[in-house]
Length: 543
Image (cartoon, rainbow, N blue to C red; front, side):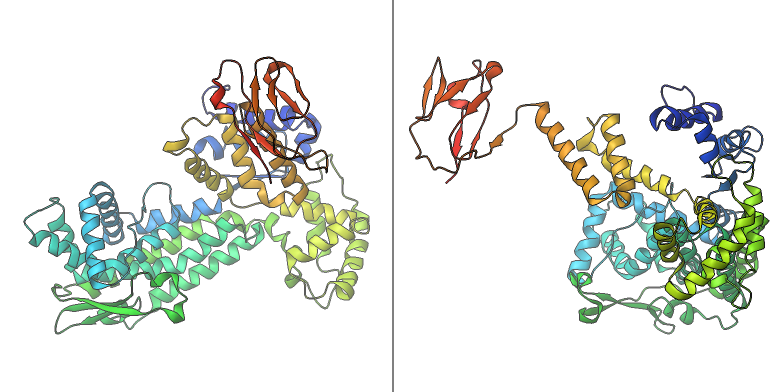
């Protein structure tokens, strides 16, 4: 983007246009007609109604389907409902506590060492405090909570021991210990985890790309049903909530206990793991714990349902309902022509495209023949497997249906692949790789993101090309092929000013300090030049 100036919608569009027209070498007409759909996050530069990037791309493509990324939508719904301090501070306090712990352990090796020393003394496994803030999806919040709840007892013992010692490491420890001893706060953490357990499967399926655009609303409603079950749950107790995530609570002794794997046993199969039980006995009385949970059920969760309805309402549009015929599970078993109407309606939406026009009169005949072929040859295949077979082997039999299938598959509802690309770039540009050029990073990213579409032959060509480039950039140790089958005895090596090297066989001196070795066994040798000392020359003769 440096060559285009500021990252505004106009320059972003120009950059995208240049990629397809100048880099990929599509004609302007091909590029205009091939673009079916686009997904982006909710930034105004992307999804602005009047002058955003998607709006500009749609100006010459009235058929284009613009999608606000579903992965970002679920994150925004969670943020709006659960982390809004005006409605309830319960979940935001939990998140802030995890952020405090993250930076404490990141900046204080002493505190981290105390925790691991305590775990080693108890012979239990503890987990790294995870980062849950910044650009993170819901699953990162859940993983952070799981680590916190798992380490709770060991963490409390470690902080208490640190405070008891004369060497106080940080002024934050007393406040952290107060939180760890608070049963009400622990109950809130556990309930937060229960809510995230209901939401995370939806977020993960969005990130993996397992859901088609027409399936989004159904999957969201399934998640809403799970959240409603939490709201309708009547039997609530401190002991019940804590035991739901593996903790044991003794109300009389005010003791919290948990069975943790022994050190090193997390690498074993679950059935082969051994556990040690750890306990902490200085917990506070759970004052107001049940009231806190009821407040969450009455204020936060209903608002979460409302936010999800609002955020995903656009997927109730007709265009997505007209795509449901793609899945054989949705086919009408009694009427083989029931899906023809949505097929034609989908085709009419894209009728202004001048690329691969649809023959409306042939759609009904092709669909009936397709249903018959599936009945005889492709019974019980999953949706993606079925269309892969059809597109590969029977495209000429059903050309119009295949064009509509391509259109539906082009409507990707999530841009999580792009977000993953950002993470890959961050991992590449580590402190040890700061000299990587932009071109090298671009090539590495293309390989990482698109590796699943390369054939074995293409992968081999890429590796050979990269190896040739690597060997040609600077002096390298090369292995010369054996050009003759006859064996030569190893002979004395003499260095001569005129010839260069003698093996007892003919050696020709070439320009630019290159060497030609004839009638020898496989050798490994280093190039040398007149400016290098003679002792830098090395010859290794293979046995």
